[in-house]
Length: 233
Image 1 (cartoon, rainbow, N blue to C red):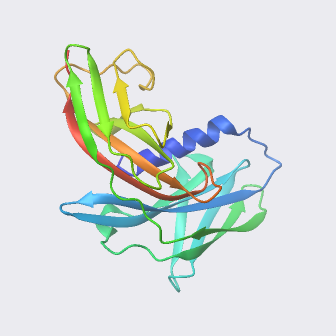
Image 2 (cartoon, one colour; image 1 turned 90 degrees about the vertical axis):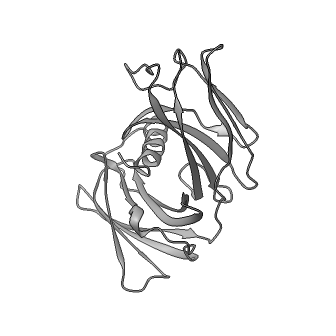
């Protein structure tokens, strides 16, 4: 699982837990966001886009008003027909921010019906979060995190990755929360997973900016930072 697939897992979980599938309903919604990450000394940008439905997609494509002649082809997220996605490949991230644009989605559902829908993307981005503290406390047997709050961030979340596998996902954290404590006995770990003492894991802090009046299906921008941490006793 690459670093941007982890974001899609968060969004997919929100979709599954908040919606009941109805095969007779063929309504789709689209969401496009600017993703910012660190590359050496530079901040680089790409886009991620998602299409959601309570029914079942057969295919989804999208075009942008800022990119004449280019068509994005979305694919099923981990086989789920309710959620299709596209993510800019790492090698194609650039130091140039994506332009504001309207994205026109065209969806074909598994029952053969078709629908078009839109999402408007502005050029607003989030700066890369700063993890001021990311250390394992051997006395309290917990991972202590502390970060600087970002203006315009709507919420935060924390992921822990073991190699390419997502092994921990926090709940959505409010925009005034700047600390977190994670223990092996706490919630959020993958089923059957226990962190191993002496092993190095990747900790990622995500910041999200929702669209005005938006929610987890209407995100304008995402940024993240990651650090390596050795799990203690």
